Length: 356
Image (cartoon, rainbow, N blue to C red; front, top):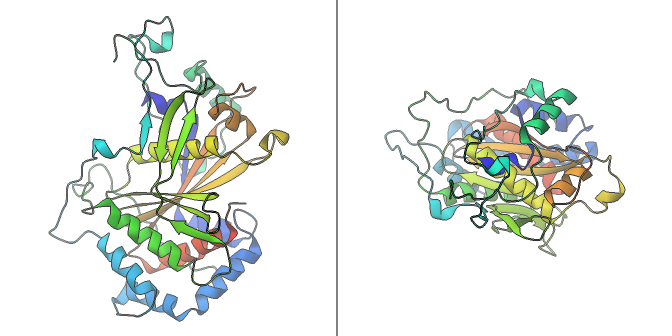
């Protein structure tokens, strides 16, 4: 989609074990003290141990994780009960504002311009992009500004290593089997996140189902698009300080989901930039998005600098800055080792309230 090219997104991926090791070292993403507290606490918690055991043996258990497991099981596809899922166009979460129809000499708005190409996500071994690649991307995009495209007359404790789990492939006939309602997935994810966060900490953060809207505007103050999320991590007292985003889908992961999440992240940055970002142009900022597609959970880390903030806010910029989105996962709710590691990771992020 042409609008997403304007966001300057560089997508990359890593597996679940990459994120686990990055957090466990205490050098990146999570402070060593926070990681130690999270792993020690959950490691001693009886209800947590019973929950993990139930993933393998299906045993009944009591406590806060009973409801967590109930909804997680609802996200697993039941044999003989396939559900074909189609997106509801009335439930769009990212809505671009169309511009008035007008004639234009802008080559990027002409009827004979080449069709936009969706960038292909790179492997985790391609995270370091050289300057030539960035220059090529800049040339391909031309002098696009952060505005909606014109509508022309022609267009109106470290666990053991995690088991690798691959998302469904294009040739898999079960690829589009889905949970019957997206809210089931949303409940499953948010209850899990709150179960490992709220009852056992003195922290001030909570995972909320609030479908917060974020709006991106161009330099003239006109709305470019609005993005709504499925939930967020926020301060319990003020209910205003967003610290992470939540996005869910009832079906297996798609490239369109990645584009939507990138648009949501960009809108969050535009609405709520890092305090004092203009005073430290070389600082690299990070933000968190956690998503669940059917029974698979992903953790995405976004990285950006001050120049990207200016760009997404429609201000003049001196460099071609990108928003890097690294997607880690999947963590499968049906695999004990995955959920144990994810519990440590997300409790650490929840307590810390940010990505280092």
